[in-house]
Image (cartoon, rainbow, N blue to C red; front, side, top):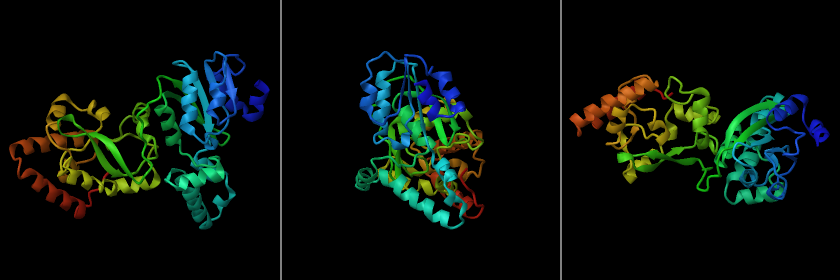
Length: 344
């Protein structure tokens, strides 16, 4: 098996894998498969699994990850690899041809990235390709691994692949329901801490929601108050966020009564932990809004400024419950249109 691995990967990749999973150990199961049965059928006691078949060629990605989870004990290691979208672009010679490359990569995105996620069309895609050609982002694969019970240990780009080293920390989540469509329903806290679904245009790769803690642990918060160096964002997502286009579907929440036009931002349970206790209690008494106070007050989008703007708004709101929102709404429109206030 040692020789087979050396033939399949470079010396650098071999060293990376061997640092976490002793390749020559009888307790390490090295395999090249996309079939979950080949994982579950192994009858030996193992404490590490290395699958060298690229994840791009798996027909059922999560099913295979779940099979690996089932065979391992907590803190056991799993190593896999895949070709990212950017790596695929880099190795294709057509990428050196101006203009033509734009059409080609758009065609690849529609057929190899979008098609496997569109109901009806994906059946045709998998029938023709058996799932062997799909385009995958780093965020999606890492998110899938976390959703199936693994914690990220390390990932590194080598030989055109991203090698992922993870360890089992829990059983797979049975209630995960990733969204692939253009509109994503985010679980957020509403008035009185009630969990609501806030609608937004998708700006992140699928399964990105499972990487929130990892991104914060890795990079912390940026001055904008959002996770720093967030690789989960898509290229178009950055534009959508800058001009608040991604938040237009929140009007659905306004119609449903979960939100209002002006108010504190709808936040996750994880983000609530980072807010001071006095502001926590104050903001849970109110509905979240589409237009955040920092826009109306023309403040910076840093975490401190945003939280202070929310505190100032809520204090005014409790003193003048009927006029504060009206005033903040028109001030926000003025700041956006005249002062060109933009999101971070």
